[in-house]
Length: 62
Image (tube, rainbow, N blue to C red; front, side):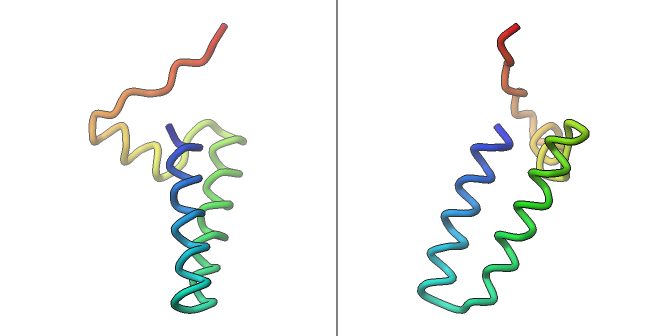
């Protein structure tokens, strides 16, 4: 679920960079940092918020 959310956020930030301001690149950097954290330790702030919201974790194949 986290990678899907990250993909949506990066797409939104690219649209905002092209239409509003180059400063929206900061959002892309923030998403990238959270993806690195998620890949290293298995959680990130977005995953904690999604868990509190009751969204199920994605099932990983064994």
